[in-house]
Amino acid sequence: MESLRQWFLENRRDLPWRDDPTPYQVWVSEVMLQQTRAETVIPYYLHWMRLFPSIKALARASQDEVIKAWEGLGYYSRARNLHAGAQAIVENFGGELPSSSADLAKIKGLGPYTIGAIRAFAFHKRAAAVDGNVIRVLTRLFAVTDDISKGATVKLLRKIAEELLPDFEPWVISEALIELGAQMCSKKAKCPSCPLKKSCKAYSKKLVEKLPFKSKKISYETIVRSVFLIENEGLWLVRQVPKGEVMEGLWEFPYVEGDDPKKFQIKLQALEPLKEESHSFTRYRCRLHPYLAHCKNCDIDGYQWLSAAKLRAFPFSSGHKKLLAHVL
Image (cartoon, rainbow, N blue to C red; front, side):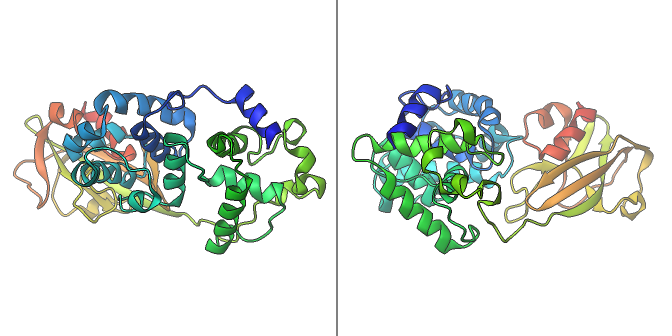
């Protein structure tokens, strides 16, 4: 692993959460980096740290403030879990992240990868942090052809990662494996420049492009919605998505399923079609057909009339945020 260590020290990216981070900074960055590229995360991370510089500051914030800071990053349960986790840490651990696996597992939203990352990068423990990058590196390095969608395979890879860690500064190798997967052993691998190519079994067996093997493929469903930007005397009709629904805590305009605006049960005045927008969430690809309209005395249960100035401060889903631009 010495060649990997040297490669990492010479080639690691300059990321704002890497220089002598606090446990809180490690936690936030690792949660943000889940299913999101580092270059996308950087401005969100810096903005978050300005708003919520400590666990106690995050715990004191309202959910609306937290979701607004996360707006556009997607997978909003991550933000809600960070908020709930901060409140639990203040209540149960005096506002400081614990270092033991058992205590970290008690915090909402922390799974095996995040626990390993916090213990390795924040507390310099001998802990493996096995994310998608590391899974890709290890399946190729050891020619593991087992299905990575199965828990047993991930458990095996976690065991391999732990065995690779040296006694001296093991956290460096943990981070180096992640960096190698991000920079070198990506989906389209750069094998000739890889520091581990001489010991890589997939490289010698010409299996690199076939690994990792994953049997389950995500199937996306396309949905179409007609969305209504309804105005009355300078106010706009919106709702905050209730707890338990997809997009919980975000704000949105009224809509009906399908591309026929006539399905909307309330009679609207001066219905004006706007440019179609699209967005994605969970397993859906959503096409939005927006309409600008006016209406008097057309209240809808669960919705409220608010000014554009107030809407500017609220977090919207990425699709409805695009529509909000017409209002603002």
